[in-house]
Length: 376
Image (cartoon, rainbow, N blue to C red):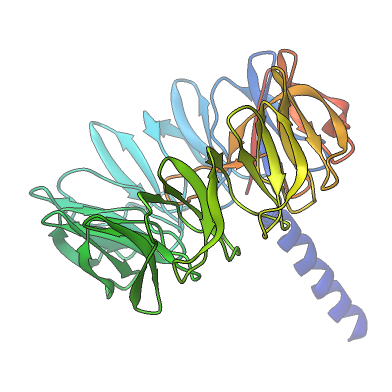
């Protein structure tokens, strides 16, 4: 019995590992393949066109048609479509015979009431549903969650979406229930710490059911995930506020970006440097550009025309010899990552793309014609 239990646990661990494996699409010799996070080539370059992995499948192009492969490179859905999109919540949009349809991983078509434009499902299993210039939502059962009543619904972020009706903005949850009334002129994405809003000439933070006005502000940005401060502008200068709408760091900077690891990049008209949460200068103003610190304590900074990486003391630990890229941006996500993520940074070195670790070593010792972000 003990051996049988161990066998079952081992099998489960292996299958879970395979299912959750992150792969990155790379191009080598004009063919696309996929590497894992160790740099090993898991699926050899063999596709003229391919998409990134999502829900365990990636779109791939063969014989003038698109199909879907798994993380072993096996065809799960044979090439048969003229156009395809990525899987989300178990469904993907495919185009054939002049029609778009939702299919599941068994290539079965989902019946829906859609008569106009088709939209991707998000991770919560919701898709926009338009009818006569109004927008609603359907789910992965093909049922209508919200009848098309709004003038606009923006992508869901953390389970909430901005909605517009008659030039007024509010917010709903994924069941369609109203979270914020349709009473704002502008509204930011949902964040548990606060939501950036504008009502008339006043800018503020919506928190605990009320709008906290920021004195003198003429713009405010969304809270970064997990941070207690966001940035706002007053008289063309930028500072930082809390969810009560209070200026914690006075607006004295020309540009600013998010706090992470207790530091934020700010611009003083000539160069970028870093301040702490009291507004004190911690890393001198000396960079042409600078980005937010990653969770591993490294931040991209631009010296002349190229980017390197510094630690929290300001020491250049990876030389400025790269072009950095933005990744992780999708229709249903507010992420727009630059620099390190999960211990790797996607960079261009001279004319080639790849990933480096926190010591600046290229992943797998290899560079490619192109490399995309890791996904699964």
